[in-house]
Structure formats: structure tokens, C-alpha cells
Length: 263
Length: 169
Image 1 (cartoon, chains in turn purple, orange):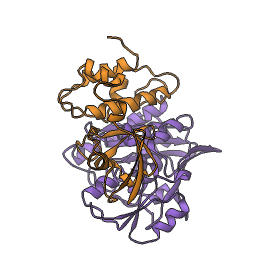
Image 2: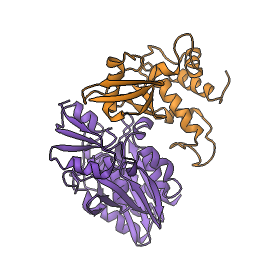
Image 3: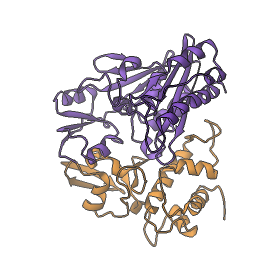
Image 4: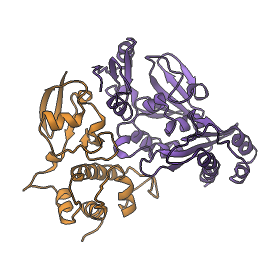
């Protein structure tokens, strides 16, 4: 690792002040950033550790919206969201492994926007709103490509708001060694339409599959997905699977997600 | 940077470079070498410790992030001559071959049984509510973060299930 200073704020206000220095970077649970630092792929002058901020850790329903604090661990979401939004709790309960879920946070995962991460699919598929100290950002505007988001320098995710759909399911086809998504799909049916968010597949990160959404809005059954195809161009191809294989999986996993949502 | 850690019930004040992982602080600064470094990036689980009651990978966190936190390492569970029940069960069931992953396996299993006692379901649990029977499948899912390259898994699973009171062998 390159050398850095570290600050340990106890409130969002202190964290925002610490991040005002342009060289500073927020550190959530560290499950991605610490390995990244160790490989010398990042060189922040100052890290601002958010894990000591108690006010960022909560899961609660308000009306028909599930609100999750940006510093809430995957384990806490898996446990506390289960009664309100089972599909999202199930997504959180399958990220990484139990030790990772005890440290990794929803805010950190969304801010990182790894193209194979689970939470971007859950947020985009749910039409969630990402809240920062300064503003509210719709999921459709938040994810802007590989590891890119709408967040400005020093802006931190304080809350994520999930409208709870009528039916939903996160279907994840894992790479068995890492348990990362080779392709995973979050399907959510709302009164006003269906959303299908795909992670793990595209070189541009999480995306909505508009064609499937339209077909499923007309008829929410696995069969309507069967005739649809996704172009292999722009899909990730690596030693775990070719671009053509991933494109094929998008259809298969979407179908299974719809089956799961209906079960 | 000064950081106070409460480790196995004892308070330690360290002055470490902010880059020091909690794992390196334990091993190199405190000479608590029971916690092992395997992959050093959160995939193998050999460095598992318990932080404020929850199992985590000590390689994926910095010591300075834990000022005031309570940490339990394998030395805090028991040592030769006074092993705790989980450690004894690993010996009895031969839950290892080379032994390198064993401290992490035992710490993870300890944290896992606490999660089960609090009713946390897993991805393979049939129900989100109520008691979780610790089937072999449940143990495998809940211990998925701890790799054993010698593949001593059958003994590991038996040791954990026996400690949990699921089987008596």
C-alpha cells in the first residue's frame, strides 16, 4: 500500500468535513478498497473511515419504502430486511461469504459499482433512490458505467430508499470459486411495470434489459422471455465465460428470476 | 497512529502505521500468531477473528479502524491443555490435515454458531423464521468463507455439528 493518513469520524457531518480535502477517499467496510489499496491500484492521501458512524446503520420501513443506512452491513440487511423485502434480503445474504457480509456495506458496494456486484442490480431493479448528504439520485441516473457513479468527489451514500415491489427475485449464477455473479438478474414487478436489472454481464456494468421489461409488463411469465435475446457485443468475456455465454445466460437467468418471483 | 484494541479481554495500545492490517497487528505487533495469513485478500478465511461478536476477515480491515473494539482470536478461545469444546471437537474428528486453516475454521464456526443461536437464516434455510437445524448443507453454506485446501471438510463439518449438539458420535 502507498502511505495514507486516516480519519475516524463519528458523525456524517464530521465525515463530510474530512472528505472536503480533495485527496481524501471514503472507506466503508473495506472489503473491496483494502485489497485495492494493497495492490497499489489506489493512492488516496487520506482515508476517511465511515465504519464508526452509528447513524449510518439502520434498516427501517417508512410507509411503503424500505430505508437502509449507507453504512449498514450486508448481514444486517439480510436479517432485518427479510420481513419487509425478502428478495432484497436474499440478495444481501448471498454477497461474498459470511465474514465479508459482516463488514461490507450497501453504501460502499453502490459507490464502487463493480460490474459483477449484487447491490447495483438490487438498487436498479427496485428503482431505488440513493441519498447523499447533498441530494437524492434515482438509480437510473446513479450507475454510469464500469466503477462509475453519479457521486461527486467526497459525496457519501447516507441512505438508500427501496420502493417494495409486489413480487421480486434476485437470481444469481455464481462463479463457484469466488461466488461473484457470472450473471445475475434482479426482477421486480410493481403496479406500474416491471424492472429487470442485469449485473455481471456487461462491460459497462449493471444495466436494465428494456425488451424483457416490456414483455414481462404485458405478461409476467417465464415463457415470454424465451424468445428474447441479448447481443454478445459489449458483454464481459473472460476465462470464466465468453461474451456469447454471458449473453445467453442473461435470458436463462431472467427466466429463472421470474419463476422465482412467481413462486 | 495510536489505537487501543481489547484483545481476548486484555487492553493493548498500539502505535502503528495506518496501513497495518488488523491481521498484521495481531501477528507482528502483538505476537498472537494463532491467526493465520493465507491469501491476504479475503478469500480463504484463515485470518478469521471475532470483532465485537461477529466473525470477520482480519486481513480485510485496518487495525486503526478498530479503536476501542473488542477482538477475540483463537488464543482467546483456549490453548493447549485447556481447549474449548469446538477446539476439542476439531481434534477428535480430525478436522484438519496441515492445520493452517484450522484457527480460522474454528473462529468462523464459533461466530457461526452464535449467528444460528440468534436465528439468522442462511441462503439454504428452508424458513426465514424459527430454529435452524444445522444440516450438513447448512454448515457448508455458513462456512463457505473458510477454505481448506487439504479438504478436511468431512471432519470439520462433524466437529461443528457435534459442538452444536446436532449429532453425537
